[in-house]
Image (cartoon, rainbow over all chains, first blue to last red; front, side, top):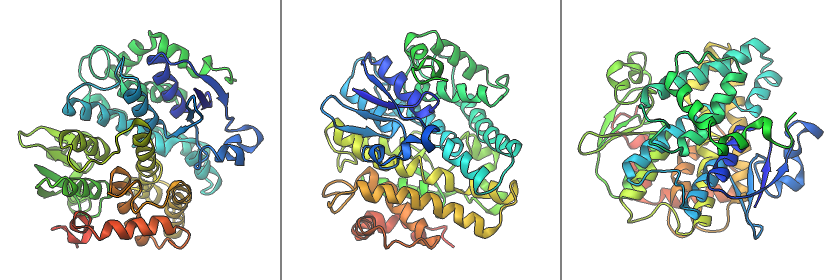
Length: 211
Length: 211
Protein backbone atom coordinates (compact mmCIF):
# COMPACT_ATOMS: atom_id res chain seq x y z
CA UNK A 1 0.00 0.00 0.00
CA UNK A 2 1.04 3.60 -0.55
CA UNK A 3 0.11 6.32 1.91
CA UNK A 4 -0.04 9.86 0.54
CA UNK A 5 1.07 11.45 3.70
CA UNK A 6 2.29 14.64 5.38
CA UNK A 7 4.14 14.41 8.67
CA UNK A 8 2.22 17.20 10.41
CA UNK A 9 -1.32 16.29 9.26
CA UNK A 10 -3.45 14.85 12.07
CA UNK A 11 -5.59 12.93 9.62
CA UNK A 12 -2.44 11.27 8.19
CA UNK A 13 -1.16 10.60 11.69
CA UNK A 14 -4.41 8.71 12.43
CA UNK A 15 -4.01 6.49 9.38
CA UNK A 16 -0.33 5.86 10.16
CA UNK A 17 -1.33 4.64 13.63
CA UNK A 18 -4.09 2.51 12.13
CA UNK A 19 -1.76 0.86 9.60
CA UNK A 20 0.81 0.20 12.33
CA UNK A 21 -1.77 -1.27 14.72
CA UNK A 22 -2.85 -3.64 11.93
CA UNK A 23 0.78 -4.46 11.11
CA UNK A 24 0.32 -3.41 7.51
CA UNK A 25 3.55 -2.28 5.85
CA UNK A 26 3.18 0.76 3.59
CA UNK A 27 5.20 3.09 1.43
CA UNK A 28 5.23 6.74 2.57
CA UNK A 29 4.70 9.27 -0.23
CA UNK A 30 5.07 12.84 0.92
CA UNK A 31 2.48 15.35 -0.26
CA UNK A 32 3.95 18.55 1.13
CA UNK A 33 1.21 20.93 2.26
CA UNK A 34 3.48 23.98 2.24
CA UNK A 35 6.21 23.52 -0.44
CA UNK A 36 5.45 24.53 -4.05
CA UNK A 37 2.37 26.42 -2.88
CA UNK A 38 1.02 23.14 -1.49
CA UNK A 39 1.59 19.93 -3.45
CA UNK A 40 -1.94 18.78 -2.52
CA UNK A 41 -3.33 21.44 -4.88
CA UNK A 42 -1.54 20.01 -7.94
CA UNK A 43 -3.63 18.33 -10.65
CA UNK A 44 -1.83 14.98 -10.41
CA UNK A 45 -2.64 14.70 -6.72
CA UNK A 46 -6.19 15.94 -7.16
CA UNK A 47 -6.72 13.16 -9.70
CA UNK A 48 -6.21 10.80 -6.74
CA UNK A 49 -8.07 12.88 -4.16
CA UNK A 50 -10.75 15.25 -5.50
CA UNK A 51 -10.64 17.34 -2.32
CA UNK A 52 -6.88 17.71 -2.53
CA UNK A 53 -6.63 16.54 1.07
CA UNK A 54 -4.24 14.15 2.74
CA UNK A 55 -4.24 11.26 3.45
CA UNK A 56 -5.08 9.01 0.52
CA UNK A 57 -4.37 5.31 0.76
CA UNK A 58 -3.54 3.48 -2.44
CA UNK A 59 -4.20 -0.26 -2.17
CA UNK A 60 -1.99 -2.90 -3.80
CA UNK A 61 -4.01 -2.87 -7.03
CA UNK A 62 -4.08 0.91 -7.35
CA UNK A 63 -7.56 1.46 -5.86
CA UNK A 64 -7.53 4.68 -3.84
CA UNK A 65 -9.30 5.31 -0.55
CA UNK A 66 -9.80 8.80 0.89
CA UNK A 67 -11.04 10.35 4.15
CA UNK A 68 -9.15 9.18 7.23
CA UNK A 69 -12.18 7.89 9.13
CA UNK A 70 -13.44 5.90 6.14
CA UNK A 71 -9.93 4.50 5.66
CA UNK A 72 -9.75 3.42 9.31
CA UNK A 73 -13.16 1.70 9.13
CA UNK A 74 -11.95 -0.01 5.93
CA UNK A 75 -8.79 -1.25 7.63
CA UNK A 76 -10.86 -2.60 10.50
CA UNK A 77 -13.23 -4.44 8.17
CA UNK A 78 -10.58 -5.77 5.79
CA UNK A 79 -8.08 -6.70 8.54
CA UNK A 80 -10.14 -7.92 11.51
CA UNK A 81 -7.19 -8.84 13.77
CA UNK A 82 -6.45 -6.21 16.48
CA UNK A 83 -9.93 -4.68 16.12
CA UNK A 84 -10.39 -0.91 16.41
CA UNK A 85 -13.95 -1.32 17.71
CA UNK A 86 -15.62 -3.46 20.39
CA UNK A 87 -18.17 -6.12 19.45
CA UNK A 88 -21.61 -4.90 20.52
CA UNK A 89 -23.36 -2.13 18.57
CA UNK A 90 -23.73 -0.04 21.75
CA UNK A 91 -20.07 -0.21 22.65
CA UNK A 92 -19.13 0.47 19.04
CA UNK A 93 -21.38 3.53 19.10
CA UNK A 94 -19.66 4.74 22.27
CA UNK A 95 -16.18 4.42 20.76
CA UNK A 96 -17.26 5.97 17.46
CA UNK A 97 -18.89 8.84 19.33
CA UNK A 98 -15.62 9.58 21.15
CA UNK A 99 -13.74 9.39 17.86
CA UNK A 100 -16.24 11.73 16.18
CA UNK A 101 -16.01 14.28 18.99
CA UNK A 102 -12.47 14.75 17.70
CA UNK A 103 -12.77 13.98 13.99
CA UNK A 104 -15.98 16.00 13.49
CA UNK A 105 -15.96 18.64 16.23
CA UNK A 106 -12.36 19.58 17.01
CA UNK A 107 -10.10 18.79 14.10
CA UNK A 108 -12.18 20.14 11.15
CA UNK A 109 -12.46 23.63 12.60
CA UNK A 110 -8.76 23.78 13.39
CA UNK A 111 -7.03 22.39 10.35
CA UNK A 112 -4.69 24.25 8.04
CA UNK A 113 -7.25 25.42 5.45
CA UNK A 114 -9.43 26.97 8.18
CA UNK A 115 -6.54 28.69 9.95
CA UNK A 116 -5.38 30.05 6.58
CA UNK A 117 -8.86 31.40 5.81
CA UNK A 118 -8.95 33.11 9.21
CA UNK A 119 -5.67 34.91 8.61
CA UNK A 120 -5.90 35.56 4.85
CA UNK A 121 -9.61 36.16 4.18
CA UNK A 122 -10.66 37.44 7.60
CA UNK A 123 -7.40 39.20 8.44
CA UNK A 124 -7.32 37.69 11.91
CA UNK A 125 -4.19 38.29 14.04
CA UNK A 126 -1.93 35.52 15.30
CA UNK A 127 -3.19 35.62 18.90
CA UNK A 128 -6.83 35.61 17.83
CA UNK A 129 -6.10 32.57 15.66
CA UNK A 130 -4.46 30.82 18.61
CA UNK A 131 -7.47 31.68 20.79
CA UNK A 132 -9.76 30.16 18.13
CA UNK A 133 -7.67 26.99 18.04
CA UNK A 134 -7.57 26.66 21.80
CA UNK A 135 -11.28 27.40 22.19
CA UNK A 136 -12.43 24.37 20.17
CA UNK A 137 -9.87 22.03 21.69
CA UNK A 138 -10.78 23.07 25.25
CA UNK A 139 -14.51 22.75 24.54
CA UNK A 140 -13.98 19.31 23.01
CA UNK A 141 -11.53 18.04 25.63
CA UNK A 142 -13.83 19.18 28.47
CA UNK A 143 -16.60 16.95 27.12
CA UNK A 144 -14.24 14.08 26.27
CA UNK A 145 -12.69 14.07 29.74
CA UNK A 146 -16.18 13.76 31.23
CA UNK A 147 -17.10 10.84 29.01
CA UNK A 148 -13.94 8.80 29.49
CA UNK A 149 -13.69 6.09 32.12
CA UNK A 150 -10.77 4.52 33.95
CA UNK A 151 -9.65 2.06 31.30
CA UNK A 152 -6.02 2.28 30.18
CA UNK A 153 -7.29 3.31 26.73
CA UNK A 154 -10.40 5.19 25.58
CA UNK A 155 -12.24 1.90 25.74
CA UNK A 156 -10.82 -1.27 27.22
CA UNK A 157 -7.36 -2.78 27.39
CA UNK A 158 -6.20 -2.13 23.83
CA UNK A 159 -6.13 1.02 21.73
CA UNK A 160 -8.91 1.53 19.20
CA UNK A 161 -10.59 4.06 16.93
CA UNK A 162 -11.01 6.70 19.63
CA UNK A 163 -7.35 6.50 20.68
CA UNK A 164 -6.29 6.71 17.05
CA UNK A 165 -8.07 10.07 16.85
CA UNK A 166 -7.18 11.30 20.32
CA UNK A 167 -3.40 10.98 20.24
CA UNK A 168 -2.85 13.23 17.17
CA UNK A 169 -5.22 15.77 18.73
CA UNK A 170 -3.23 15.77 21.98
CA UNK A 171 -0.05 16.20 19.94
CA UNK A 172 -1.56 19.34 18.41
CA UNK A 173 -2.82 20.54 21.78
CA UNK A 174 0.78 20.50 23.00
CA UNK A 175 1.89 22.45 19.90
CA UNK A 176 -0.73 25.10 20.67
CA UNK A 177 0.27 25.28 24.37
CA UNK A 178 -2.97 23.96 25.76
CA UNK A 179 -2.82 23.28 29.48
CA UNK A 180 -3.45 19.54 29.90
CA UNK A 181 -3.80 19.71 33.70
CA UNK A 182 -7.65 19.68 33.54
CA UNK A 183 -7.50 16.46 31.49
CA UNK A 184 -5.86 13.73 33.57
CA UNK A 185 -7.76 10.93 31.80
CA UNK A 186 -6.82 12.16 28.35
CA UNK A 187 -3.21 12.64 29.49
CA UNK A 188 -3.07 9.12 30.95
CA UNK A 189 -4.45 7.53 27.77
CA UNK A 190 -2.00 9.55 25.69
CA UNK A 191 0.88 8.28 27.81
CA UNK A 192 -0.30 4.67 27.53
CA UNK A 193 -0.64 4.91 23.76
CA UNK A 194 2.76 6.50 23.29
CA UNK A 195 4.35 3.51 25.03
CA UNK A 196 3.33 1.41 22.05
CA UNK A 197 5.44 0.99 18.91
CA UNK A 198 2.47 1.58 16.60
CA UNK A 199 2.03 5.07 18.04
CA UNK A 200 5.76 5.83 18.33
CA UNK A 201 6.42 4.95 14.69
CA UNK A 202 3.51 7.16 13.62
CA UNK A 203 4.72 10.28 15.45
CA UNK A 204 5.13 13.30 13.15
CA UNK A 205 8.81 13.73 14.02
CA UNK A 206 9.49 10.11 13.08
CA UNK A 207 8.29 10.55 9.48
CA UNK A 208 10.74 10.79 6.57
CA UNK A 209 9.42 14.26 5.62
CA UNK A 210 9.61 15.70 9.17
CA UNK A 211 11.36 19.05 9.40
CA UNK B 1 -36.80 5.60 21.38
CA UNK B 2 -36.61 9.29 22.16
CA UNK B 3 -34.82 11.67 19.84
CA UNK B 4 -33.52 14.88 21.40
CA UNK B 5 -34.03 16.94 18.34
CA UNK B 6 -34.13 20.44 16.87
CA UNK B 7 -35.90 21.01 13.58
CA UNK B 8 -33.16 23.10 11.98
CA UNK B 9 -30.14 21.04 13.05
CA UNK B 10 -28.56 19.15 10.14
CA UNK B 11 -27.19 16.49 12.47
CA UNK B 12 -30.71 15.88 13.84
CA UNK B 13 -32.10 15.85 10.31
CA UNK B 14 -29.65 13.05 9.45
CA UNK B 15 -30.78 10.91 12.36
CA UNK B 16 -34.47 11.55 11.58
CA UNK B 17 -33.88 10.27 8.04
CA UNK B 18 -32.00 7.27 9.40
CA UNK B 19 -34.75 6.33 11.87
CA UNK B 20 -37.37 6.71 9.13
CA UNK B 21 -35.41 4.60 6.63
CA UNK B 22 -35.17 1.88 9.27
CA UNK B 23 -38.88 2.23 10.07
CA UNK B 24 -38.13 2.87 13.73
CA UNK B 25 -40.82 4.91 15.48
CA UNK B 26 -39.53 7.54 17.90
CA UNK B 27 -40.67 10.28 20.20
CA UNK B 28 -39.50 13.78 19.26
CA UNK B 29 -38.21 15.84 22.18
CA UNK B 30 -37.37 19.40 21.24
CA UNK B 31 -34.11 20.86 22.53
CA UNK B 32 -34.44 24.43 21.34
CA UNK B 33 -31.07 25.84 20.30
CA UNK B 34 -32.22 29.46 20.53
CA UNK B 35 -34.98 29.77 23.19
CA UNK B 36 -33.97 30.26 26.86
CA UNK B 37 -30.42 31.11 25.76
CA UNK B 38 -30.20 27.64 24.18
CA UNK B 39 -31.81 24.70 25.96
CA UNK B 40 -28.84 22.52 24.94
CA UNK B 41 -26.68 24.44 27.43
CA UNK B 42 -28.87 23.50 30.43
CA UNK B 43 -27.48 21.10 33.02
CA UNK B 44 -30.28 18.53 32.61
CA UNK B 45 -29.56 18.21 28.90
CA UNK B 46 -25.79 18.20 29.38
CA UNK B 47 -26.24 15.26 31.74
CA UNK B 48 -27.46 13.36 28.66
CA UNK B 49 -24.98 14.86 26.21
CA UNK B 50 -21.70 16.14 27.64
CA UNK B 51 -21.09 18.33 24.61
CA UNK B 52 -24.53 19.90 24.86
CA UNK B 53 -25.10 19.07 21.19
CA UNK B 54 -28.14 17.69 19.43
CA UNK B 55 -29.05 15.02 18.56
CA UNK B 56 -29.03 12.46 21.34
CA UNK B 57 -30.90 9.20 20.90
CA UNK B 58 -32.33 7.56 24.01
CA UNK B 59 -32.92 3.85 23.53
CA UNK B 60 -35.90 1.99 25.04
CA UNK B 61 -34.01 1.18 28.25
CA UNK B 62 -32.71 4.71 28.76
CA UNK B 63 -29.24 4.17 27.28
CA UNK B 64 -28.18 7.32 25.44
CA UNK B 65 -26.27 7.53 22.18
CA UNK B 66 -24.64 10.73 20.92
CA UNK B 67 -22.93 11.97 17.75
CA UNK B 68 -25.08 11.65 14.62
CA UNK B 69 -22.61 9.55 12.60
CA UNK B 70 -22.10 7.10 15.48
CA UNK B 71 -25.88 6.89 15.92
CA UNK B 72 -26.37 6.13 12.22
CA UNK B 73 -23.71 3.39 12.28
CA UNK B 74 -25.44 1.99 15.38
CA UNK B 75 -28.82 1.94 13.65
CA UNK B 76 -27.28 0.15 10.69
CA UNK B 77 -25.67 -2.48 12.90
CA UNK B 78 -28.63 -3.02 15.23
CA UNK B 79 -31.27 -2.92 12.44
CA UNK B 80 -29.69 -4.57 9.41
CA UNK B 81 -32.76 -4.35 7.11
CA UNK B 82 -32.58 -1.49 4.56
CA UNK B 83 -28.78 -1.19 4.98
CA UNK B 84 -27.12 2.22 4.89
CA UNK B 85 -23.87 0.75 3.54
CA UNK B 86 -22.98 -1.67 0.73
CA UNK B 87 -21.43 -5.06 1.50
CA UNK B 88 -17.79 -4.97 0.47
CA UNK B 89 -15.24 -3.04 2.54
CA UNK B 90 -14.17 -1.00 -0.52
CA UNK B 91 -17.69 0.06 -1.40
CA UNK B 92 -18.37 0.83 2.25
CA UNK B 93 -15.24 2.97 2.34
CA UNK B 94 -16.44 4.86 -0.75
CA UNK B 95 -19.85 5.60 0.77
CA UNK B 96 -18.35 6.52 4.14
CA UNK B 97 -15.85 8.82 2.42
CA UNK B 98 -18.69 10.68 0.68
CA UNK B 99 -20.56 10.93 3.98
CA UNK B 100 -17.45 12.23 5.75
CA UNK B 101 -16.80 14.86 3.10
CA UNK B 102 -20.01 16.39 4.43
CA UNK B 103 -20.00 15.37 8.09
CA UNK B 104 -16.33 16.19 8.68
CA UNK B 105 -15.45 18.85 6.09
CA UNK B 106 -18.54 20.95 5.40
CA UNK B 107 -20.96 20.77 8.28
CA UNK B 108 -18.60 21.21 11.28
CA UNK B 109 -17.16 24.50 10.01
CA UNK B 110 -20.61 25.90 9.27
CA UNK B 111 -22.71 24.98 12.24
CA UNK B 112 -24.33 27.37 14.67
CA UNK B 113 -21.55 27.50 17.30
CA UNK B 114 -18.97 28.39 14.64
CA UNK B 115 -21.12 31.06 13.00
CA UNK B 116 -21.81 32.52 16.45
CA UNK B 117 -18.10 32.62 17.25
CA UNK B 118 -17.42 34.40 13.95
CA UNK B 119 -19.94 37.14 14.68
CA UNK B 120 -19.55 37.45 18.47
CA UNK B 121 -15.87 36.78 19.15
CA UNK B 122 -14.39 37.83 15.81
CA UNK B 123 -16.88 40.62 15.08
CA UNK B 124 -17.43 39.39 11.53
CA UNK B 125 -20.16 41.11 9.46
CA UNK B 126 -23.21 39.28 8.08
CA UNK B 127 -21.95 39.17 4.47
CA UNK B 128 -18.51 37.91 5.52
CA UNK B 129 -20.23 35.19 7.52
CA UNK B 130 -22.32 34.21 4.50
CA UNK B 131 -19.17 34.16 2.32
CA UNK B 132 -17.55 31.84 4.89
CA UNK B 133 -20.55 29.53 4.82
CA UNK B 134 -20.71 29.44 1.04
CA UNK B 135 -16.96 28.96 0.66
CA UNK B 136 -16.90 25.63 2.50
CA UNK B 137 -20.05 24.32 0.87
CA UNK B 138 -18.81 25.21 -2.62
CA UNK B 139 -15.40 23.66 -1.95
CA UNK B 140 -17.05 20.49 -0.62
CA UNK B 141 -19.74 20.24 -3.30
CA UNK B 142 -17.17 20.73 -6.09
CA UNK B 143 -15.30 17.66 -4.89
CA UNK B 144 -18.48 15.66 -4.17
CA UNK B 145 -19.92 16.35 -7.62
CA UNK B 146 -16.70 15.00 -9.17
CA UNK B 147 -16.79 11.82 -7.12
CA UNK B 148 -20.46 10.96 -7.68
CA UNK B 149 -21.56 8.62 -10.46
CA UNK B 150 -24.81 8.21 -12.35
CA UNK B 151 -26.71 6.10 -9.82
CA UNK B 152 -30.07 7.42 -8.65
CA UNK B 153 -28.56 7.80 -5.16
CA UNK B 154 -25.02 8.49 -3.94
CA UNK B 155 -24.36 4.80 -4.31
CA UNK B 156 -26.72 2.34 -5.96
CA UNK B 157 -30.48 2.05 -6.16
CA UNK B 158 -31.39 2.85 -2.57
CA UNK B 159 -30.46 5.73 -0.29
CA UNK B 160 -27.68 5.16 2.23
CA UNK B 161 -25.29 6.86 4.62
CA UNK B 162 -24.00 9.39 2.08
CA UNK B 163 -27.52 10.45 1.04
CA UNK B 164 -28.48 10.79 4.70
CA UNK B 165 -25.69 13.36 5.07
CA UNK B 166 -26.11 15.01 1.68
CA UNK B 167 -29.78 15.94 1.77
CA UNK B 168 -29.60 18.08 4.96
CA UNK B 169 -26.52 19.79 3.53
CA UNK B 170 -28.37 20.61 0.29
CA UNK B 171 -31.25 21.94 2.37
CA UNK B 172 -28.82 24.34 4.06
CA UNK B 173 -27.20 25.24 0.76
CA UNK B 174 -30.62 26.44 -0.42
CA UNK B 175 -31.03 28.45 2.78
CA UNK B 176 -27.72 30.16 2.14
CA UNK B 177 -28.54 30.86 -1.53
CA UNK B 178 -25.90 28.64 -3.02
CA UNK B 179 -26.22 28.25 -6.78
CA UNK B 180 -26.86 24.55 -7.39
CA UNK B 181 -26.43 24.79 -11.19
CA UNK B 182 -22.80 23.51 -11.06
CA UNK B 183 -24.02 20.39 -9.19
CA UNK B 184 -26.44 18.46 -11.42
CA UNK B 185 -25.58 15.11 -9.83
CA UNK B 186 -26.10 16.38 -6.30
CA UNK B 187 -29.35 18.07 -7.37
CA UNK B 188 -30.62 14.88 -9.03
CA UNK B 189 -29.85 12.76 -5.95
CA UNK B 190 -31.52 15.35 -3.74
CA UNK B 191 -34.64 15.20 -5.89
CA UNK B 192 -34.71 11.40 -5.83
CA UNK B 193 -34.35 11.30 -2.05
CA UNK B 194 -37.05 13.89 -1.46
CA UNK B 195 -39.52 11.69 -3.35
CA UNK B 196 -39.27 9.21 -0.49
CA UNK B 197 -41.42 9.32 2.64
CA UNK B 198 -38.45 8.79 4.95
CA UNK B 199 -36.87 12.02 3.70
CA UNK B 200 -40.14 13.97 3.49
CA UNK B 201 -41.09 13.14 7.07
CA UNK B 202 -37.63 14.23 8.24
CA UNK B 203 -37.73 17.68 6.60
CA UNK B 204 -37.16 20.52 9.06
CA UNK B 205 -40.49 22.17 8.23
CA UNK B 206 -42.33 18.93 8.99
CA UNK B 207 -41.08 18.75 12.59
CA UNK B 208 -43.34 19.63 15.54
CA UNK B 209 -40.98 22.42 16.66
CA UNK B 210 -40.67 24.03 13.20
CA UNK B 211 -41.20 27.77 13.19
